[in-house]
Amino acid sequence: MARVGLGFDVHRLVEGRPLWLCGVNIQWNRGLLGHSDADVAIHALCDALLGAASLRDIGYHFPDTDPRYKGIDSRLLLQQVMKLLDNYGYGLVNCDITICAEQPKLSPHIPAMINELATCMGCDPGQVSVKATTTEKLGYTGRGEGIAAHAIAMIETKSAAQP
Ligand code: MG
Image (cartoon, rainbow, N blue to C red; front, side, top):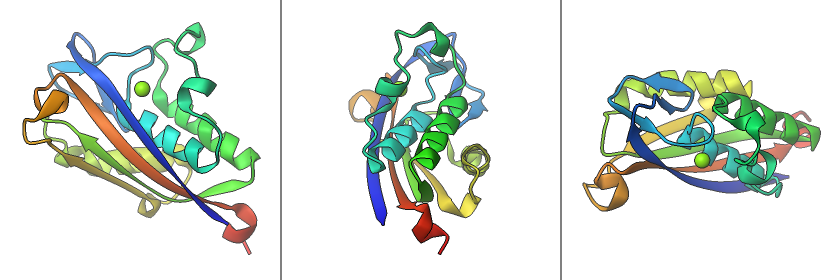
């Protein structure tokens, strides 16, 4: 059986932090603020995957009050989410992420992001899509106050994936 899930996340942009998106370190003058590395795109993806399996959300599994997750590489969280889904008998069909950022230009980084996520999730790059958009200078993303990410993921029971 195939199931679908939706994820959404926002982090504030501040000076003095590295910018991580989809597990790729992007050289820029600001980065995202958060308890972890604040990789907003991976967080949205984790929520989409957990949502598809009806397994709550990233904050439930990795609370930001837990010192174990302070500064953690979000790729490790994604790997744990994939392991959890595997334990429940689910495999990934595909996922799609849209990152909303006025700056920096993300287009040159998209192939690296897709490869990084695919490596992390143990899937084929063809199962992963990453897109970027501005919000035409409108709202908090348009003013450069933060970056938002939307994600959708489809999973299926492994018996269906491996007939
Ligand atoms: Mg987050």
